[in-house]
Length: 92
Image 1 (tube, one colour):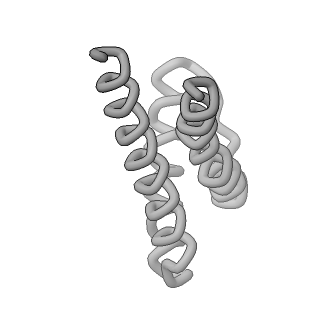
Image 2: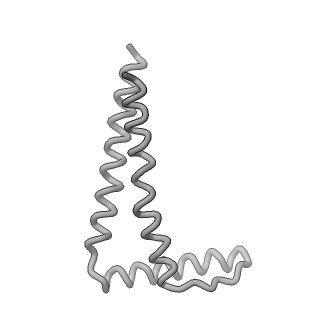
Image 3: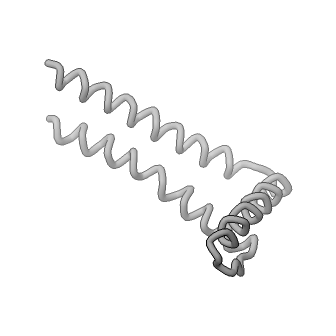
């Protein structure tokens, strides 16, 4: 019985996590271009500082940061989504 309760709690957490990541992606996708460009520039500055700290010569552009962000934005939601359905189907 305890396993069922834990399993149900895990499913709920995974569902909420998946919905949150999808909502985050939707909000960022609907962001105006000016705000998005400012956010990308801030991230570019942050990544440049980190790469310089590790002794790597950063040759990045705003375009590369945006492509990495889009890849991450569309990839990350599938991890909790996968676990939610994997554990839901395997328990039946």
